Image 1: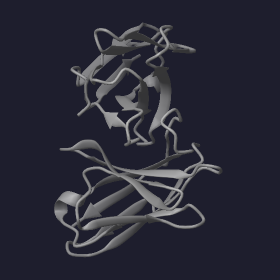
Image 2 (image 1 turned 30 degrees about the vertical axis):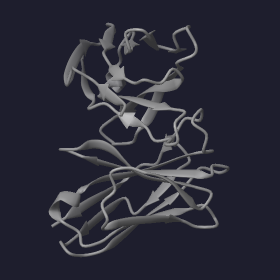
Image 3 (image 1 turned 180 degrees about the horizontal axis):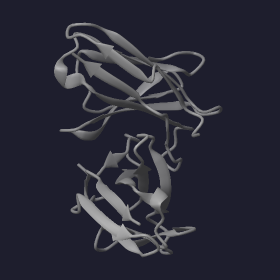
Image 4 (image 1 turned 90 degrees about the vertical axis):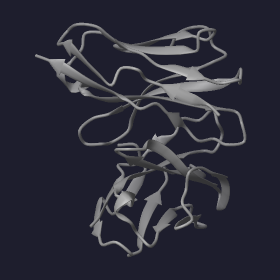
Length: 115
Length: 113
């Protein structure tokens, strides 16, 4: 079974600084998708960024970018120019082309942004 | 706003009771996924429906059941409720292929007293 591990339960960053959230996963599949979702205090799950495993280029969405290392099964999220609104729980998630289409989530990293 | 709607937003009930959570997917989406978020178990997949048929099952208890109706909305039925069923229940939708991102509804907060 696929597993997703987020080893940093909590992190903090100063406003305008850069922070990197870590995620590792375990799979025997070669074709899969990775996601970062953000869950602010409202509890809404919001997609931040996604990465297709067959693409070597790291995904980027404005201030959010990933460092995807397929061989190492690592998928970190970098947030540049952190803003107060970035404070949230961040979840790393995985799914593949198997018969099941569900997302497998990590345990989350609570990000605090300090003014 | 993801386009996925869930009702009710909050639900408070007693142990032993039965509740129904409702989800309407985004326009054009055929697949609905149910997830449970609890403090001790994290985010867990419960069940997936595609165009009215069950496609995948996760860690769903036998006391729980779901269905997807012809208009594609879905209902999650939770019965014989226990204190441990208190959680945030999310519905997500997409067109049903793995390439498609799942978009989440706002969730239903269930509190069992």
